[in-house]
Amino acid sequence: MASLVRCRVLVQPFRSQINIISGVFRSDSVLHTFLNKRAHCARHAFNGRVRLYSSDVKSGDDLIVRYLDGDDSGIVVLGINRPQAKNAISKNLVTMMSEAVESLKMDNQVRTVILCSMVPGIFCAGADLKERAKMQQSEVGPFVTKARTLITELGTLPMPTIAAIDGAALGGGLEMALACDIRVAAISAKMGLVETKLAIIPGAGGTQRLPRTVGVSVAKELIFAARALNGDEAKSLGLVNHAVEQNKSGDAAYLRALDLAREIIPQGPIAIRMAKLAINQGIEVDLKTGLAIEEACYAQVIPTKDRLEGLQAFKEKRPPRFKGE
Image 1 (cartoon, rainbow, N blue to C red):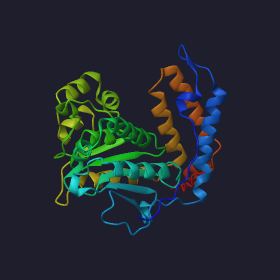
Image 2 (image 1 turned 60 degrees about the vertical axis):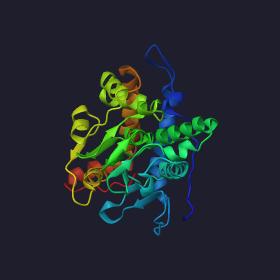
Image 3 (image 1 turned 90 degrees about the vertical axis):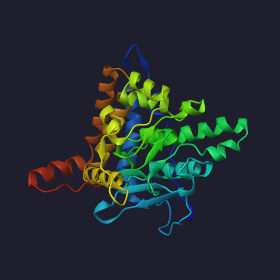
Image 4 (image 1 turned 120 degrees about the vertical axis):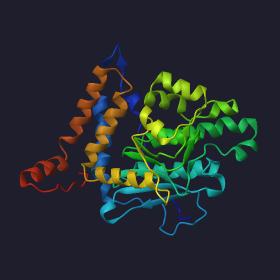
């Protein structure tokens, strides 16, 4: 595989930048400093293109990363590709996905990321149990921690992420999808956190993200019973945003995800990132603090050239040409 080009920046977690005491936002200056750094990256990192892999990916790669071009420029597709193991999460897949996510994090030409499967009929079957069976007991904990870290990093990517679930998403597979901002599933797909069947619990964020998505009581029922849902059932519970009839080629959810990505990419990229940041951080705190976060995020879009371009385009009755500046 072609070597990965990395671009790293050290940014402390958002929550560590603010001091919340009795629901009062206590450090506006620190928050604004943090957001200024994030907005600076969003405004200026468009100067260089970060490439993940060369276009001649090998068919045996566990992860295939595609940068779309033309009218779809700005969309990146992460395709899990382990047909021999139903896309199960292995050590190598975790490593490859971690490297890809790390690179995407600082590539501000990327407007939207789609996570999908390159294997028909399966999204991700969860942990690679054959590999897990060969691990020493002392290896299991560190591996689960690494997988949990990967999924957390996926969830904190600054650009919108869409999971396209065209087949079974079980255990860690559903946990990956839960970390995405939007989920689209084929009606025929099966989804569930089924770890209790193996006398373990979801260990990569499932016990936290599922209740935040469908509610505490429903999440408990699903996890306790190790229940798998189809696309329609998942849609009715709010687990997925859209449920679509599967097509003959088995990629209906991916095509719907692509349509959603195409709706997102024309919008102001800095505004999209700031909106995601405001939503993700605001739902974790009280309303008063959340409103302060929203205000601080809004302040970051005011000095951008994109905001002025949006006003000018409206005045001239033409589509805006946003550059992320």
